[in-house]
Structures are given as C-alpha cells and as structure tokens.
Length: 264
View (cartoon, rainbow, N blue to C red):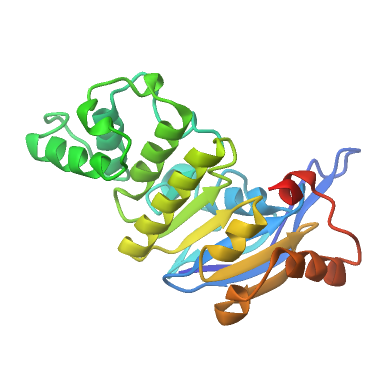
C-alpha cells in the first residue's frame, strides 16, 4: 500500500540552521497495516507524514502508493489519496461552514464538482447517520457552524471527514495531543472503530507510548531521522513502556529524554 525507499530530507541546507530531518528512510506498509509511530522531538515523525502528503518535496528517494509513484506529485493531487487528521483541531475543518457542508466538501474530495445542488436530501440523511455514531449530539446540529464546536467535536468531525471517502492511506499526526484525556480517549476509540470497519491502512504519530503499544498491529520508533525499531504481531502486544525505553537506549546509545512522552 505504501513504499518509502531511501527517502531523505534536509531543511535549510548549507546554512547554520541546517537540519537533517530524514536520513534514507525505508518503510513498507501492507494493506490493512495500522502503524503507530513514536520518537522524541525532532525524530522525524511528522516530517515523514508531511513528505508522504506532499507538504514538502523529498530531497532523494521514492514514495509509492500502490502502483503509483507520487515522489514528484504536488500536494493538491495527492489529496485524493489520503485522509489526514492534524494535531490542531482547527486545521481539518472550515469554521465558517456548516457541519453538513464540511462533510459534503470532504465527500467531493478529488471529484469534479460541476453546477448542481450543493447537498442532496440523500446526502443529508447519510451525513446525519454518520455524525450520530460519534455520540456527541451533533446529529441535531447539522446546520451549525463548525467554528461553534469544541476542539474535541471538531477533531471527531475531522476524522469523519478524512474517512468519508475511503482513503488509500490515513495519516494521523498526534491527532489527540491537543485534547483533554477524556475527549482524547473518545477520539482514539472512534479512530480504531473506523479503521477496523473500513479496513484502512493507517500511520499514526503519537507521543503516548502506552497508546502506541495497545493500538494497531505494528509499531515503529524513530530517532534522529531514522527508523531504529520496527515491531509487530505478538511481539508488539507483549511490550511494555519500559521495554520501549530500554530498546531506545540500546539502539540509540542514549537515554530517552522526552518529558511529554514520559509523562503520558
């Protein structure tokens, strides 16, 4: 489903602010893989997701989705392939538009729009049913402006928008980090349900080691622009946070020092 081959990225090359964000990354995702990605600050986690989505151009290497080489494809053309949920709940929705209008926009992603009625009666019914499953009471507020919703409600709606058309790959960039613990738990549960129901392939960056172990079928750890640990199946299920810390120290040769991840 996704093949990343020898991909590198350096920001501000040749300057005092030069940063080698990714160093010859290689990663293959099979259809149905749900991969959690962990690592300290500056490990390259979000950069990897942004290179896949086309936010930044790669310096070298190749990115292939299915049989399609997207290495040089602009971000707007890749949008039809991916569903994305960002860390900031405000980024995935249009605050001045209604809930149903946001969903309609997401459903038409990558399609020709033409001159026809904005939202059909059939779609309104479909959207209401989809929103009802969120369990947030939004099904009775379909004409409300999204800007009036809480951060958790907007993030749940963004998740729904990202998957209303089955994407080739779902990219989740610390999508529960800005939420309170209770709301984060709810959004994470919804994430698992949707991925399992639609049999999606997903990459989820998280700062929560416990979540990274419990969720998905595979876990990768990154450090200084490289993948230093890749585990799946029964071995992943038997892991503890202490095992990850120990593995990090063994592979990287230094102590894990990310307060945000350790506290979570």
